[in-house]
Figure (cartoon, rainbow, N blue to C red):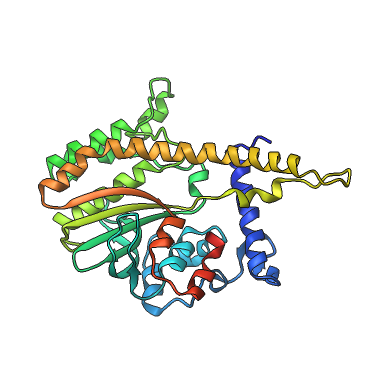
Length: 330
């Protein structure tokens, strides 16, 4: 069975709800009647009550997350809060080179980019004594065609804090841009660069990088640390999520081999999208090599990494009770 990306996106939402109902039987009434993948109350989507401090983070953010977005079963902001919680975040020894330490946490951290009234909002901000980790979390967004572009404002040198980051940033932006020789002229006029990607929002990431650079070296919105990492945290599915794509036999005769083939083919379709997403990130990481060098010349070891939600959660020190609440994502 062939699934295009839109159908796959819808199917995953169906399966996420089925997974929720398996883990929380009898909770169907918590979902909005006219929006089957949205809870009527944001509290039903959270693993724990949100503290006043954390609620303030979301209320002051640009995305109006508490106004409805976090009610979505597939909400990335709800997933981020459920993973990192209200208090201190403890990272244990792990194979993913995340430094074991205790970190303070903030959400929707604002960083100035070019337009002072439109800052970048970092989903999760972790700070230890000598290291910063900033997370851009994506649950199902990478399965939608909604990557951003770059406005012509970014073409103005005077908008950037210095010539080095201006040159490096634009070299990266051009490297990941769509070849627009055949695009309509009016589209050329709208934006400086248009992404050629279908999964990784590279221009959102580049704007975050510029915000991090300015925050460290110019606006002091970030404390100066020797190591700073931007992590793209991507939720990925395993084969279990597609189990319901196998339709029961109308003959009444079970055929495990046919069922296994159907499951395998559906999962293979998903894997093509995931592999494309990983390939896009690899090309993006190669494109930002010059930017990484600009940070290094100023004494900061900076990098951008891609980790799955499963990998990130495995690094977090969690009680069995906490892990149980995260099973919906794992």
